[in-house]
Length: 244
Image (cartoon, rainbow, N blue to C red; front, side, top):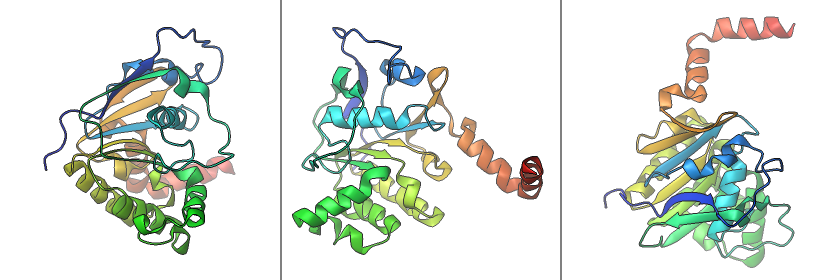
């Protein structure tokens, strides 16, 4: 099946009737203030930026506004004591395409252990190809991509590379492409230059100036990784000399 030309998730904006305090978290984050300027790619939209730039805050808000639990999983996963959630999702208005997605998942690296434990507790492991706790962290992440996600879905991934080796990141890239070919849409927050190389995508940079679309070769992730690998003896010498 060809890739989608109409996104399931088109854009997000603030509800016009809400009076926002841009001095309070998370509305004081420049990228959050410009969230309404983002049009989501029908295949893959990447969020990139430094730690603290708002990527995870935004992807959490999108997920919760779409009906997922804050810790991740499908919309059926509801865990007690899921921790604090920013109020951003409460003021979002989401524009959605038609038809609605048939499948959906929110993968959040930092709380995936809790989702795996929940699956064991409720006795639902078949959809993942077995217990997630019976595998390494990286194998469990891949089980979600390979077994759980069924296609024609809307999938939000927050730093999926956290548990993946470079080879597994390449495998994840292939799995994402197969799901895109099967009519799926992804929104992914990542630091991985491997995942960011996916060609059927839009890359949104989060920084102190707000939000802006960038080309793959213009991302810091690509530039820093390429420079280090091409000149690593010199870069190591500079870094270690500076620390001394």
